Structure formats: C-alpha cells, structure tokens
Image 1: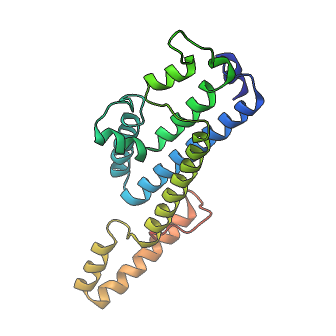
Image 2: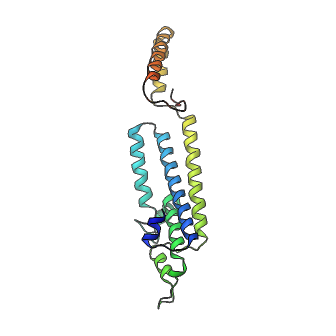
Image 3: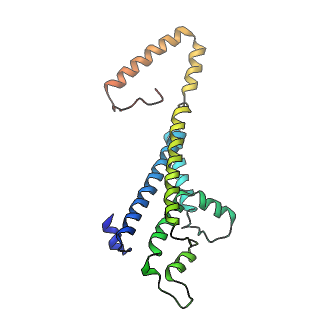
Length: 202
C-alpha cells in the first residue's frame, strides 16, 4: 500500500496515508460483505454469478465516476447515495484534494482542489471523510446481517421438493431414502473437502 501511495504522488502527510489505508480497508470489507450476502440469497452458482455481475455494474455505474454526481436527475442523486462505492470516492477525494498543496488560488478566486471537486460533483467538506467511513462500515454491517438472516431462514434449493417426494412415497420408502442418504453422507465424509462448520443445507 505505501509504495503505490507515494509513487503515485499523493499527499506526503502520514495522517492522510493512514486515512486512505483505513478507507480502502472499509471499501474492501463492504464489497466482500455485499458478495457474501448475494451468494447467501441466490444459493446457486449461476444465480450468484449473475447477481454479482449485475451488482458490480450497478455500483460502478452510479458511484459518481461513470455518471457524475453533478447531473440533476433525481434517479442519479438517489442511486449515488445508495451506492457503497460512492462513499469510498467521497472519502478518497476529500482526503487528497483538501490538502494544503491543492489550495493554491486561481484567477477565478477558487482553489485547484475546489475546482476538481466541483467538476466531478464532489464538493464536500473535510468532515465528510468520517461520514463516508461510517457509511461504509454501516453498509458492511447491513450486508453481514442480511447474510446471517439469509443463512438462517432461507431453505436450500431442492429441499422442499425432497420433502414432497418423501411424503408421496410413504413412510417405507422414506426410511429407505434415509438409509441411502446416510450412506451418501458416510461416503462423502471419506473423501472431499473437510469443512470447519456444518453447512446449513445438510
């Protein structure tokens, strides 16, 4: 992290470096939590891949980088406030462009940093860094709670179908099915991956 930070030419203040470090950690934590939540809700590989790709598209589209925040459409305004990546962009831009080296006055009586912020629709004050950081950790907490609820209450795909088939076949066939299921569990335990937890679909 420190090599790209100083090679790119960001502000040399140590405080700004550690702020960017914690902000990038928050963005990483939020994105990881979002994809965990989508995987728990979708439950199959195909659906999770589709939902994940769609989520990346929406988050990148409305974060304020592709479609700038300065456009006046209310849909863009609302989606900017809902997109977790927009808070990362706010925090990073405030952290860098409000440093003293970007505060040189221009003939238009504004600073270079202010003009950069206004051209991208990110004219926020210094304290918005902490709001952005809190929002990112809030999104991570929200996605983690959704992940836990999805694992607790959603039934695995195909489980209801198996229960219906067991009721139709009767008690004798269901006992035979249990024996076959136990044999398959024992054979699965002999080979394959060892998990540190019991999956919710077993």
